[in-house]
Image (cartoon, rainbow, N blue to C red; front, side, top):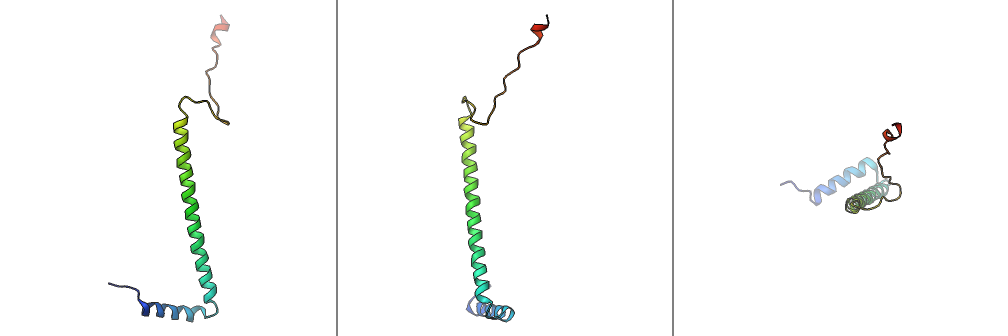
Length: 87
């Protein structure tokens, strides 16, 4: 099986040093770490939003039966019949 061991990692590091130079390695490492941190943060926020949406949908489906409309919701009542006034 193909695995990445210490010799392979050293070769990759040498190639990166040749391409970018030794002075840029700390900046590259910092940028890579920040990108991983931001990715984890966005995944956590997306998961929290999804859980909140699921919670709201279950609350509205359970609470909507026989309850009064909450703020911002309207109820539609049938309009009175106009036919009786014409005769």
